[in-house]
Length: 251
Image (cartoon, one colour):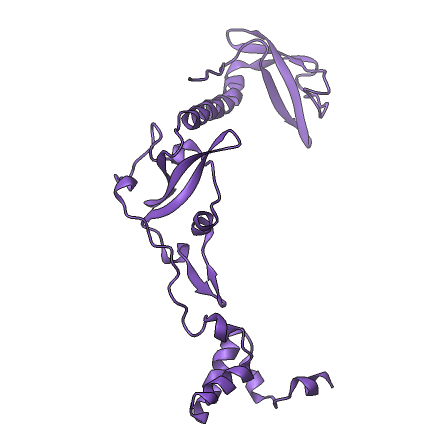
C-alpha cells in the first residue's frame, strides 16, 4: 500500500523560521499567485519555543518562491520516508536482501520480524571488503570490525531502503549482483606470536623464562625484551635502567 503525503503550499501547512536558539512556527492561511499569508501559531504545544519572527509578526506575507524552497526539502524527505516504510512493509520473513556499504561492499541479510517490526539480520559479508574490515588479531584479542561484529553478535538493523540492492530504484553504479557473490569466511586466522593471548599477557621476565626453558640462546634475550617494549608502546630507554623485582619497586 502506497502512502501519499500532501506536498506544496496549502492552507493549514506549518512553516518554521529559525529565531535565536529555536524556531517560530507559522501557519499558511492564504495562498496567492506570488505570495502567501502566514499567521503565527499561538499554541505552546505546536510552538514550544514561543518565538515570533520579527519581520512577519503575528500575521505577515512571504514571497511564494521562498516558501516553496522552504517546503521542498521537507516534501522530499517525506517522500523518502513513505518509500522507506513501503519497502520494509512489503518484505517477506526470511527473504534475502543485500545492504550496500559502498565500493561493492555488501552485507547479506535475512528479513526477520522483531516485536512486530520488520528488520534485517546480517548473515554474511560479500564483495570487495578491505582487510581491516574483517576479523583480525589486535592486542591479544580478536577485533571483528563493525560489520563483522554485527554478524557474529546477531544484531539486526534497518538501513535506509535506498542502500538495499533489491529496493526499487537502487543505483547499481558498479553493475554487480551481490546474490552471485560468495560469503567471506569470518573465521579469524591463528594469531601470530605477537598477538597470541598466551604470550600477550606474559610479563617481560615471564617471556624470557619461557624462552630459556625451551633452550633459547641468551643472546636473543635482548631481542625479546625489545619486542615486549615495542608491543607495549614503551621507551627503549628502559633498557638502560637497572632491573628491580616487584618488591624492590615498592620499596
